[in-house]
Image 1: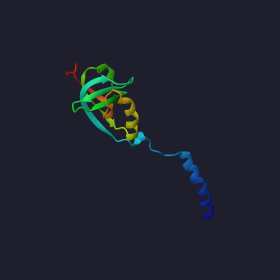
Image 2: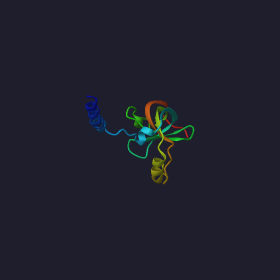
Image 3: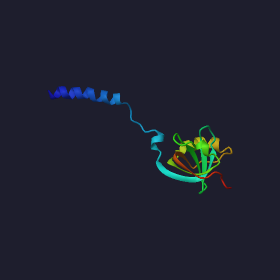
Image 4: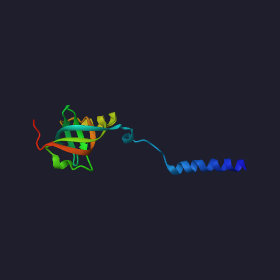
Length: 124
């Protein structure tokens, strides 16, 4: 009887594993995410739906949000909070070939979850 169970397990385990599919980590999964708050002047980004903010520490952040209407605050001084993702070295190199042709280099991307308006204009 134990021979039958062993034979059944021999065929059943690989079938179950194959039906689950491969478990892999993408580059996105490998990126460290943490909460970050940045205050600065909200600007349009390089692409549609993208925004940027230069923090008081001089770092430029790429902003995106599905829950906060960033476009309503372009030109305002704001404080944004969200989760950060730093690009991998390969992604930085790939995008750097395009971005270094005159645009600002981003420190990291920030998926904004909250926004507080500090001022309706940016002082320069």
